[in-house]
Image 1 (cartoon, protein in one colour):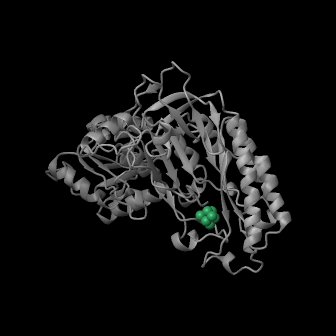
Image 2 (tube, rainbow, N blue to C red):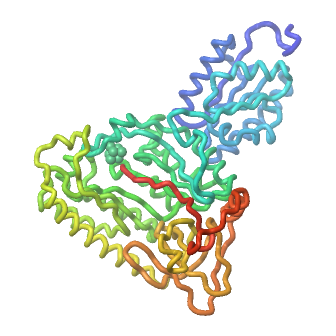
Image 3 (tube, rainbow, N blue to C red):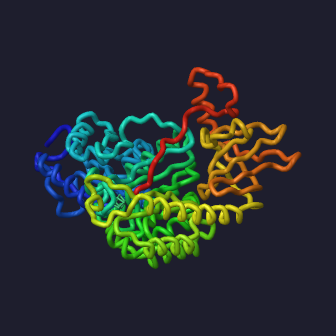
Length: 500
Ligand code: SF4
């Protein structure tokens, strides 16, 4: 008889229960492997000495399923001397110590980066007679998990994948970053939770091609599920993402956007060209009608969505007819704004050595026509918002002329930039607070909301505003430079170029 465990010297048996996706199934194989390497044998019947639950944070009711299972195992454990229960996987990575608080009969909680330590943690728990919690945060390929000093108290970027499996002929990303690597859902959700705990109320999910997220672990609907799971995080008010790819954009993502209140009515959908011939040369596998069909379906479910895009003018071989196709699609798409680029050779890309490079003056002339058309559409689309009420998340450093105009700036829910004034007698909101204003003027690139005389500003104080106060108090109080707007400092979100 083993004095420590109360079991005989026979090999201890184990069972791994897997909740969730293919990546979890794969991880469970590794868990089983590491237990067997440590001398455990797989249990034939349902009375294993060690039960390992490999959790998922994305599936619906993931918490209920975990705690329901743990509840049942608690009574099994009472009758089975020496039995141990371990919880790992995405939900463990996300909830950490909460699991031990809710289910103190659990012996080991371990994260997604330290699966190999499971046998040692089980042994330590038996030896010390107390539960072991070990969660490692590091995952080298995802820069956002490395120590970070966030530049904004109210908003954060969260990387969900790196690399790209596409091979667009103008793009250097595949040769620089390699194949897509997907970060685990539990890690992403844990990082979002940490940001929210620090006061952030907005996150932007980042990937070269966010809607192919899940390809690595065999779940084609993983991105929609991730949006829904992020939408469950209490205190997170605004979720954005960039960039999806039209070829892989599926209706389940549209449904997740429409049904998750925290996902903002904003979509960046890179067109690149309206000519099917050029899209083929770019090796982008959608065609213009498919692209416009996606926009129709998004607008059917999210009528207020602001859709933005990227367009390249003058790709090798582009004729005037091809360019006319781009103008046609731009007219039909009614983008709220577009990032427009003149094609230029990028060494190392397939397009760099293509024949028929378009002369610079031709590219310039087409570019000017495209910009004029899109500016007009942006202006018309913005005009439609005059007289409507919008909720603006107050930013710091977004309005370059704020000091001169005595306005503050921020983003509406649909991502549009809004400059608003502060009526006499109203206190200035803090960056991170949310103001309700009515749009009074529109320009192609921004909206203005000037309050009628005698009005007061409607401000909702938020946790993000409180976090701003704390950050201000923590920094040595450097006075505003003369002429700067109240509360404006030189912080600001890092700039980011969408590329998918
Ligand atoms: S443009 Fe986007 S989708 Fe195409 S290869 Fe580059 S990163 Fe991938």
